Length: 282
Image 1 (cartoon, rainbow, N blue to C red):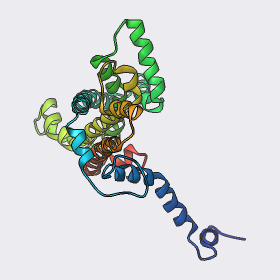
Image 2 (tube, rainbow, N blue to C red):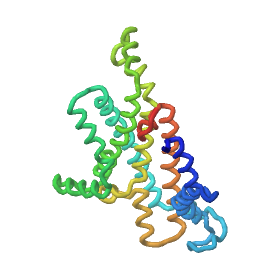
Image 3 (cartoon, rainbow, N blue to C red):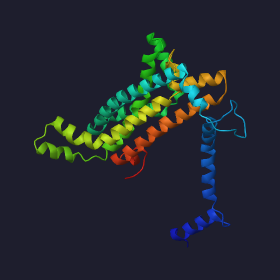
Image 4 (cartoon, one colour):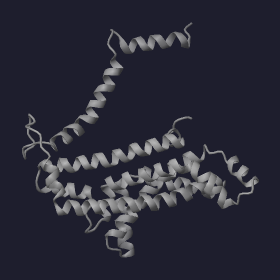
């Protein structure tokens, strides 16, 4: 009769026989498959020739210089920056307040509300974009700055709710009770006890919302109207001409969200919200 302890070594040997770590090789191949296109795309942004040819010929920053001097890109960058900043502020405010309601009030309404708040995360961006178009037609709204901002806020709020709610479920509410026993008012307990403890998770959620908004394409296509963001700029440019300028834009699109996500991960780790938000255990 075999036992669990005897099955484990046998399983491990089956993954490494005959002396080759097949699982490690498969993981490395998967990583190369995922990240090699990104590395190649970023590499051509530093090309010294105007064609995307192989082998790589020389190094130059001329495409970044050309990009930064192009008025259309600068306008698109500022639009994206403005939309992402406002989206982060509004979505974080609404999402944090909703998280308080979902974790402090036990009722069927809050359970249904929490499920509905997470719904945009599970829906395809194309479906949300088409829904916004139908709503704009119904309300006779013209696509533009307002609809673009509303579209980003609607989809960014669930990310904030997921992160902040996950942190609040591990928060000891007895700390607030202790502050109240020491004479603090509800507002003072919130300002001096609760918010400082939740601050890393809230700021991390805001950074996630900012990164998502800056890089969003599908919802933006349906709601932007005459506005042009950085993702729409690069899509339009690639329709006209293919040169390393598009790769330079791609580097910006990679760096800004990745740096923001890295900062958010650091803050969430400090605030104790990473594992819970991603389904891990603390």
